[in-house]
Amino acid sequence: MTGLKALAVTSELFPLVKTGGLAEVTGALPKALRAHDIEVRSLVPGYPAVLAALAETNTVHSFADLFGGEARLIAGALPEGIHVLVVDAPHLYLRPGGPYAGPDGMDWPDNAQRFAALGRVAAEVALGLLPGWVPDLVHGHDWQAGLAPAYLAVSGRPRPATLTTIHNLSYQGLFPATLLDALRLPHSAFAPDGVEFFGKIGFLKSGIHFADQISTVSPTYAREIQTPAEGRGLEGLLRARADRLIGIVNGIDDTVWDPAADPHLAKHYSFRSLGSRTANRKAVQQRFGLDEDETAPLFSVVSRLVWQKGMDLLLSILPSVAATGAQIAVLGSGDRALERGVMEAVTDHPGQAAVVLGYDETLAHLLQGGADAILVPSRFEPCGLTQLCALRYGCVPVVARVGGLADTVIDANPAALGDGVATGFQFAPVSAEALADGISRAATLFRDQAQWRKVQRRGMTRRLGWDRAGEEYAALYRATVALPR
Image (cartoon, rainbow, N blue to C red):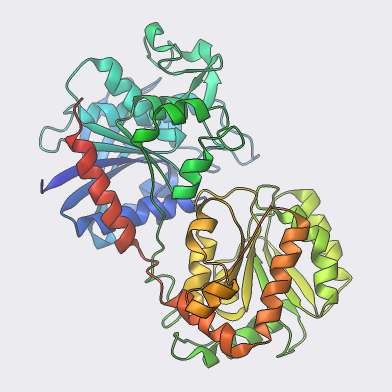
């Protein structure tokens, strides 16, 4: 089958709107699929930033009433030929704040309607709203797109194939059952074999139940979410649909993350010129006020400072790590208590540990290009992009053996070092003691610079871009379209 058409349904799309890795994926995947003769149009909400970024648009349909107000569907294009369809519904999306919450940080009270509208428009497009362009497949991303397969299923009309991708099962889109009529769902749909989930309307549950295929962002995470420990109540449904569940590891944009051309670095380098990383290492030490010690291993953290990311574990051992002579540079923000704890901890170790609260894209790139290693002690991690960027930059990852971290980092055990395949360090269980052991192993290997360079080079020469993931998604798209329905 050639000339496949796919509608991607997403609440975020880089470079239009981004809060995390979801936008990176949905922004990069259409470009990767183009090489496989798959045309993707991405359906996104008309947030102010989205509308402002599109210089030229064309209204392709108008809605007299889309969940409480008039709306229109507009078409536009981004650089590199990425085509978008935007749900311009001012009563739902034209407001300050982020995609999901207002300036006060509280979720918008009408998020159910806001993202039901996204799913409803997706279903209408899938059913032929735009006669000149009818998709062969609808690809919904996360809970915000979860009702699209449900609307298609209850329509009773011939429909295209559907695929739901789970980026993070922790966010499910749960809303009161009393909204069933407001969301224009038939009462028959409110059942375990439908949109009902523990007495509520479950957007992600709907996407998982009604989609022809389900994917998530790493093979290990696909297995983990079928267990009570990580299934968040959906493990039974996921086990029942295990034959339709696949894990595909995300890629990174290797033109944005390229140490040979990165404008954020003090000096460019490649796996053939690792000595040039020294200039970036010094730049990191100067920016963070660390001692310019060439012998101390420099560990970095680029993360949200939250429980999921294991930042409390790092905080508990930070003083003992700094006491060994190692250096730690932290960039991130999140839980206020963890922010205060890290600030207090680094104050006790001037020259050895430092933190910059917040997120700074330039500094994130510099840390990848200058730190010796990066710490990713997540309690769970569906895929993770930080460790992929680190591999690309020769910043050796020290990661928890969970989810996509387990699938993308090859532990530097004696056998892997001997075979020349090691790319970093894994530790388990996810505990302070195991994290400390992983850091100690990395610091020990760092003293053997010849071996350390081999690990760096192996990571930097991995296939980390979207060409590999694009191949796998293209095969999944075609297999999904071929399924009976």
